[in-house]
Amino acid sequence: MSRVFIVGLGLIGASLAKNIKMNQPKTIIIGLDSNSETTRYALKYHIIDEEAPSFEQGVHQADVIILGTHIQITLDYIKRLNALDLQTEKIVTDVSSVKKPIMDVAKELTNSSVKFIGGHPMAGSHKHGIEAAKSHLFENAYYILTPVTSGLDKQIQILKDLLKPTKSYFIELSEKEHDKMTGIVSHFPHLIASSLVHQARNWQDEYPFIPKLAAGGFRDITRIASSNPDLWEDILFQNKGEMVQFLSEWIDEMKNVRELLISNNHEDVHQYLDLAKTYRDGLPKKKKGALPNFYDIFVDLYDRPGELYKVMKKLAENEVNIININILEIRENMTGVLRVTLQTEEEQWTAMKVLENNGYEVSLEE
Ligand SMILES: NC(=O)c1ccc[n+]([C@@H]2O[C@H](COP(=O)([O-])OP(=O)(O)OC[C@H]3O[C@@H](n4cnc5c(N)ncnc54)[C@H](O)[C@@H]3O)[C@@H](O)[C@H]2O)c1
Ligand SMILES: O=C(O)C(=O)C[C@]1(C(=O)O)C=C[C@@H](O)C=C1
Image (tube, rainbow, N blue to C red; front, side, top):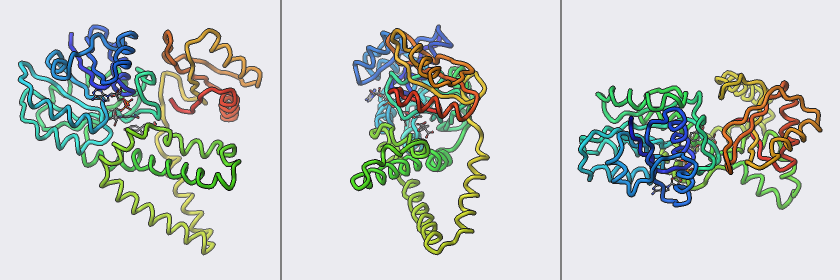
């Protein structure tokens, strides 16, 4: 029986806690969060078994420590490991979205009882906090590991065994490779999504109808602009070097596209769009959850009498034919997610609009 200490019980920390609890019920989960309401929630819904009296005591009590806080805070916790007089070996990992600053600090650790393995599950959400946590969040996602030194094979295997039920795919990368690649496909798109929202907002004074027209395309490309600004400020500055480089490249590219439009260069604009389409179409398809991907929508559902019925009724009234429904985690007083599977893309679109117009939060991805 192992003891796992999770520091920071937000979206990622609590999702891991739920996954471990569900699949390895004998593992004791000790938790720590600076927000006492979060800790109360975690204890009440058995997401953790015990609250750690302090960071230091939690580390002493555990075999594996998962640092699930924002990066700047995680850096402080890693530094605090050095001062501990530990009797047994501790496997310590984090979940931070940027790896170089973490690994720089971890490499400075002189406490030989601490075996640090950098970690980053490449899945998440624009939502944050314990209430958004889901045990299946990491299903089919890549889980990147960045070990601090070689010779940690045994510890890496223990960590992988613990996290195996997340059903994610483990890969090892250097921190440099990690920050470059996640910078391109995760961090930089956040800046662009936010910039598109600002542009729409700036034009809204002159054209107040803009938000009503901001439908499919705009919503798809800007979903991530709804993420937690505290987290993303942290991520963007921790990966500042890459961000500045990508921004410079992007500005040059946009200037070039502007020139193509001004000079009526249809051929090159077509080629620009066509190349992007070919690359985008070739990206691996997302497959999450146990069901094959027909046309799913995901509806936030609160645990209240009649909620499921209301959703089904609205869809029936609009003649949406449902292939399957699946409730992904709903427990007393918790927001769960209802997956509704439709046969066609058109029905997927209709179902989403019908429910959104009736006040539900709906997304095409979980
Ligand atoms: N959100 C995502 O999509 C995502 C995906 C993968 C990895 N990550 C990484 O996971 C980490 C956590 O992100 P999140 O989205 O779960 O954030 P979150 O805001 O949902 O959770 C952070 C939790 O840490 C707690 N906390 C704050 N200060 C603390 C302290 N000093 N000690 C203990 N707890 C403290 C907060 O109360 C909160 O519960 C970040 O480093 C982020 O880079 C995020
Ligand atoms: O799905 C989202 O909302 C996310 O932003 C998740 C996402 C990503 O960009 O894919 C964001 C940051 C993480 O470090 C990992 C995953």
